[in-house]
Image 1 (cartoon, rainbow, N blue to C red):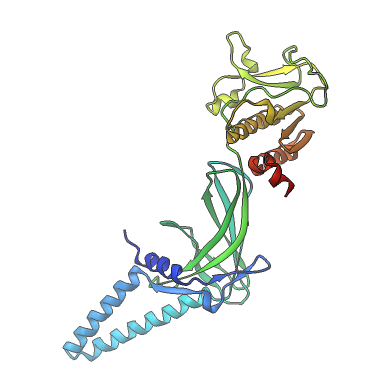
Image 2 (image 1 turned 90 degrees about the vertical axis):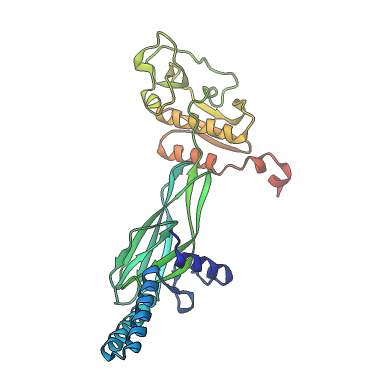
Length: 331
């Protein structure tokens, strides 16, 4: 259904847009940054008032005129309260935890008021939907959680948000644009299955890659073969529809797995990053020490959640164009 209010908002915003910004990360809504237009219900209400006015004038009905002007005054007071409901708000946005490509990046928008007057029906539109509106007590703040789809790795930036209200009668919609610097890290999409990672760290010669089953050193995944023990199957990978994959273990306690860009043969850089992401997740799941090598970047072997997040962050922010261009690297 056509939304006249949003259409006019886009047209007005393209001509002149006043955006609330804050040097300290908190934007404060001023008088000249608030827009207001009647909603669909407001236009219908105005049409009814116009018909009532014509009828009352035609029949010289003083009671009808009184009632018409009373309703018009109510609408004017409601318009004032709608505009005033945004004035003086402080808005601050912050990013959520990292996500993988394809998941929704989460953001939190904290809306606060310094005065003692409470604010009602404060929300953030999202396309054709509208996030659940919140009420903010006087001198307090409220949080609105929004989600944005992710299509590529890197930083998902929430450049601008629109804060709106239709309080008290939904006859008018007032809104303002707020500039933010909130970001959420987006990890690369891991491949379904990746080849076995490289050999041990710091060795001049590769160490043996085979050993008795049941030892603690992780050598990487491989496709399932007839006769493999069910205990060696990576059932979590099977549940993720990656097929039957078998975990390989070896008996060399000093071995460290290197996950190396140069160890893959894929020509597309993004495909390589996807494969490296899968190798990093598999190695972390097996709780082995692993390192990461990228052109111009190296993460020393380690283990644990902190090491995993650092490796995934390197992969998410890695710029393969600049890393392989000596001129950009020198600059």
